[in-house]
Amino acid sequence: MFQSNFEQLPIEIKEEIFKYLSSADLLNLTLVCKNFNESIGQSRKCMERFWIKFYSFNLKDLEALKVSIRNYEKIKVNRVKREDHFQFLIDLQQNWKKILIYNCEFNYYHTYKLLIESIANNVEELEISDIEVLCYNEPSNMRINFPALKRVMFRNMPSKSMEIFLNSSDTLENLALDIVHETDNSMSLHDITYEILKHSKNLKHLQIGPLYIKALFGEDKEKAIKFNFELKNLLLKFPIASDLPDFSYNKIADFIKNQSKIRWLITMELRNDEVLTTCWNELKCAEQISFFGLEELFDYDMIFDVNDPNTSIKKLSLISRKVLISHLNKLLKSSPLITSIHTKNLNRHMLNAIAKNHFGIKTLFYENIEEDVLNFYDELQQLDEDVNKNIKIIQKSFWFSDNPFSIDPIFWRKE
Image (cartoon, rainbow, N blue to C red; front, top):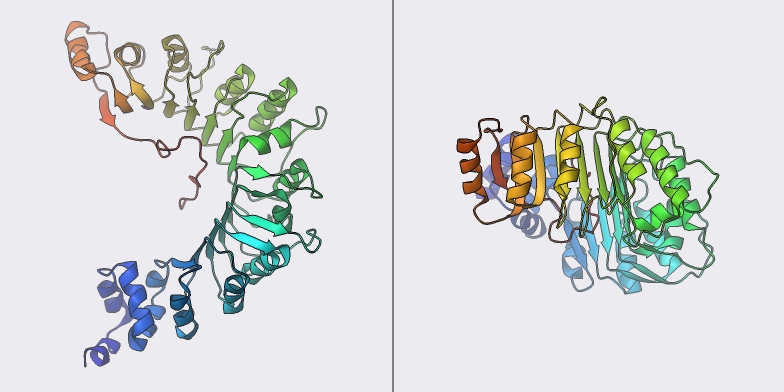
């Protein structure tokens, strides 16, 4: 009786009811009840909430999906190794729009290629992470078109398995490239990276890990690196060992200089004054700059022209174990309109420098705080009139505090 009455309700009322159910509850309903399955399947908002989780030991639910309404859009494929399980996914012919493939092992390149082909026409967001291809039983130079692909993340995968994506970049807006292991008889990592970026005319968000930086900027001293896209967000994760040749930093500085519309720049383990100076002086549209280091940030001299400060920067992140106060003062003087600072370890010296040297700071975020710092700030306001008395001091973790040198798709948020 309830099901019959439920079917008479407008879809808007059904969606209000569905809002109070978890994604797991909704998915269970679609698998056990045909009427609910059809009602939920008609609701675009409901379908967008589902991640179908496909594991090697969880084929039962996937079998039920064969007879379920076919509007599911998101799937996570995890720890799959068996050929018949991959074939099951291929045979589904589902129009997946968001796909995560991670911790998987493909016995043959042919199987990997068929799986990618089966998703190519509709996928919009794709992450491939920690995969292995054991046998390349056919040439890997085939290119597949991805007419709808907008967001891609490749992390810890064989370089040879990336070649299939070299035609994917016409629609690409968001790209993250991290750990890679180069395979024999494949294109060089420089050529793979360069080819993907060269055709990415619509790219807005880019994250590049250390091996890709070294391959892209560290191989050919004479060849300039120029692309047709205009980035809004850029993350550069430099090699910790600082084994880049000197000319690489010149090329990186030129690359940043040509991306004049960047709004948010993030660097990890940046230890080159030319790149830093370029970041600060050339990016006149940047609203936020974030610097990260394992130990000490900026262990070299910084030279800024205080007569031509960067007035676009509003937010500054200094996430490291140690930040020299002399360097902090230089940053503050060269960016007079900063309103927010995020630091890892807040101590008296840092707070004293900020409060006395920058009266525009409204918010100071920290992850760890030295004992009695808040009392120190109260005393400072009482004893010194020439001090910023309007700073809100708030504890807040940054987005990858637990694992600061992983690259997560931090720019994958909706505009």
